[in-house]
Amino acid sequence: YTVSMLGVPFVDKVLFPNDQMDQTGGLVAMLITLSFVAVIAVANGFVQGSLFGLCGPLPLKYTSAVVLGTAVSGVFICALRIGTKVGFGDSAEGLTMGVYVYFSAGGVFSMLCIYLHQRVMPNLPIMLWQKKQEAMEQGEYSPLMKGSPSDVPSLRDSDRETHHRDREDHALEEGRLLRHPVPTEDIELMPIFRQLWTFAMAVFIGYLVTLSIFPGVLAENLKSSTLKSWYSLFLITVFNLGDMTGKMCPGRYQVKDGGLLFAFSLMRLAFVPIYAVFVEERMPDTAFFIVTFSLGITNGFLTTCSMSNAPAIFNDSKTAEIAGTMMVFFLLSGLSLGACGGWLWIFL
Image (cartoon, rainbow, N blue to C red; front, side, top):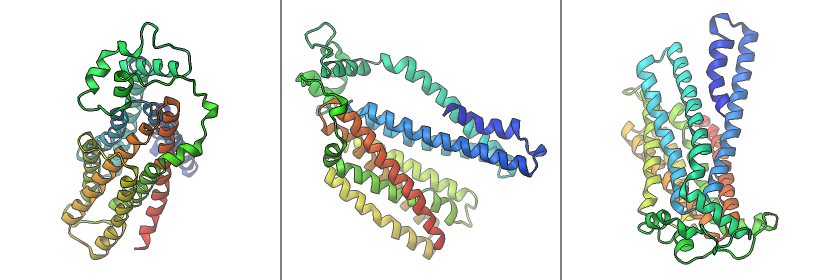
């Protein structure tokens, strides 16, 4: 991921500078760039699945934090684009510099993430506790041995106020630990899906709706005589701000019922005809900002509630980990299908 992010500006600036590029060189540069983008997409899906699987056995707030991080990154990129647009302008050279800044920032930040993952995260109290939990589930660790999970007071103290119903509180306060090992090969996917299908379909439909509208419609189909080239950028920024707000709401207003989340995702299908009517009737800019913020805040709330609560319905860490990864599969499936569905807007 890091090499591909840094490779895009390197290929364009060093290997194939514009003033020395013929038609063949341009084709090669494009193929290399597209290859880097494909690697980035694959690596992104792999990392997301791994992270949500890692957070699956942990208390809800850790999955919520990962989901919130995706929203914060969207807001950061919008702010970065606004800065590069102001600093470099809309010329071809300015757009090129904006691309360089985007991919370079992503590469540098991913290197920081690698360092945190290797050096900092393994030593966090919650990760040390989870390792002991897994060892006990596999019969390799006894709660009577020195260094049991009850020796991690910071976890109990920090979670008692706001997360009394989380898995961590139950494990620390009630000693709810599995007594028998749960071999990974004995875990079947279909029984897991039967228990979390409402959460899975909620996030699938949610991203199907969102990606069929965002960012394609906001970037390509809408024009403003007032904001001009800033219009699509401001709309995307408003969506990301709404998405971030929605992903923060479950910290106070949590919905744990999969059936309700599934029904909520079906209600969000109404955004498709709403945008279709708005585009056809050429509604004012204010109307698009309001409905776009609503699209973002509902997407964020639905994502956090679904992704954090689905793994929590399972008692053992291995099943919860698989559940977290399965949820990412449905999220990315809805995202991909929704992005393909966005092409249908060109017929409006």
